[in-house]
Image 1 (cartoon, rainbow, N blue to C red):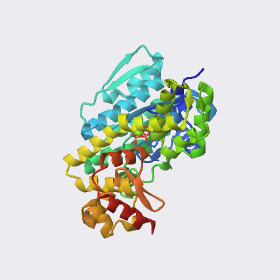
Image 2: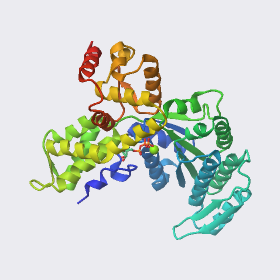
Image 3: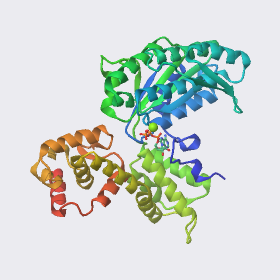
Image 4: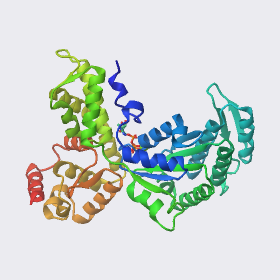
Length: 417
Ligand SMILES: Nc1ncnc2c1ncn2[C@@H]1O[C@H](COP(=O)(O)OP(=O)(O)OP(=O)(O)O)[C@@H](O)[C@H]1O
Ligand SMILES: [Mg+2]
């Protein structure tokens, strides 16, 4: 019998834990197998990395099914890179990793690898796993053309080995965030490499909407027009219920008629909340003293409370603390007010909403713009709401006593009109 942990993951969704996304999978598979680069757009925790990794793993496992001989990929997240140099090194390391995967252990291929990357002062070791480990030492990191050359070297290697290679770069907007001008030069550097590659492409993911759009839609930027955009949204309700039903049956759990639906209603199919709550529900029902391995609506309600208390409250608290340290008080009270009221977009500039937040309209509007850019809030049915249901619940709990209840009611009523 399978374990419920096979069906849900708190990290990147792999294997059985990954479901749905047919449309995105098809587009990604077509593009990556033909070496066309892709921009994966979506809010925080919506499943961008999971989608990219899932498709790459499928291509790697069954290359011939997609008309290719061999497929290698490697992935990096540059959000923790503090300098442009660190980012460059991280991306180079990822390119080297993909090169190692193309090469395998074949002596001839390793020689090829060495010569393709000769200018990077390569250091090579063949480890216990089946790949040659390549480390690129960049003597002069300021060299303008370094990423371009590395991409072209990888392309040359891929061509000789009759392979395709994909590099996934997560949180790509970090480059422009670190330093706009230098970051943009790297984008041109990458463009120059990709433009001349027939066997290498990249997947760029990132949750900061405006910055990512600037990278790919601004005509004066290097990567303009280079990538197809693929959007990732919440998981559809029916598919979530079908997945929960499948998991329950295959793992030997029973459930109340409404319980599974409740998991989806609470999380609105937001992948992160959905997978975390599902895991908590299965875990709690496994250890239920009265009726083990049965999922009731009470199990779901209690599991939601546990998930909020054990995981999300801390996360949201530290997010608020960070905002406080950066003097973003307007963002703090605006996001809390939104959590309590889900105000209609055309009521943001009203005196009542301003009174609730405790600020005048101008800082509120500025805060909303920033919160949206950070992927924390968005418009649903003409109302501002939190992107993640668990964040809304946590913010409500954290700021339970911060607002005048009469004003909360007044804004809610105003939004109904
Ligand atoms: N297709 C899917 N099926 C099931 N669960 C998924 C799917 N996609 C994502 N998830 C779940 O959602 C959560 C977030 O996934 P992931 O880290 O891929 O998102 P992301 O958009 O890359 O996040 P971030 O903004 O932090 O980079 C994880 O718990 C993952 O298991
Ligand atoms: Mg990610």
